[in-house]
Image (cartoon, rainbow, N blue to C red; front, side, top):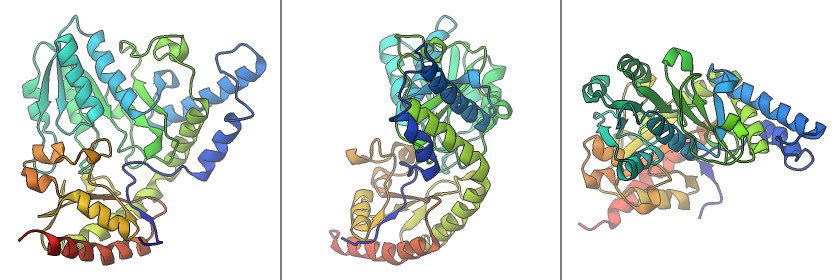
Length: 387
């Protein structure tokens, strides 16, 4: 195994920034008080947590009262879909989601199907991974109460036409939610301009800590809690708050808001270099959109014909390059990517997915090394395949 390690899997998680860690540290040990307690030191902790809520809200142009902290993106997605669906069940039991969704939305929808007799329409995506707003409009019925379409899929990087779909949902009286975990820190998010009812965020994909996320819920939107207990988060999400995580989340949002433009410029330079060079290799095909203005700026994904994606990941790892075949929530199941199957790829081709997502610490030298190693990897694996 190579002694050199290059991390190109930022869609899976990102390192915690030093400034974020330093902001969190006092609240792990010295300032440990429960923010719900009624003495001075607890009030001080509560105030710091509310400052973090303000930072998260500002990051997406929301009000602090519209932010509910969760344990991460999965809980926030479950909370959004199940909570909105149950809150509106008396109006109808039909929900619409896309085939590009994270499994925390897909499986939450199946849960509503099985246990609460909801009807679910799964909207397909086209060859570039986009949801067609017209297909959403066609699927809406008088029973439709909730629509959820991801802001950008983790595996192909295509940024969905959320504003247009949200407008359709609003015109037809349905609530609209989007999972913005993949886009936060890469695409400017303004919930007012997007016209949405709920939005999911997670700290760990934007240089914050793991174990903390948030659900934006527009003021006036009714939602049924997912977790019951105390009165934390204004009664919308029970449980003692993850204070250090929340404070780190707030700091990560503050930094991303200040530095996103420079980050995106850096990402695009490295991403475009990867795409331009790897596409030259025989049997390597870019997945997702070729309109790079509608693609996550740090994201380059490919199909490598005739080779299983996991084999590529393992060989690249031996060279010191860390990357992935798709969503880490399912990649170890050795299954073909559901999103690629929905895009029309065969089962065999969909197993050949490989994804590179760059970060703020990656350099051109890192990419040069990838461009040196990747062709060798493909050649070596093809040499040992059965003829």
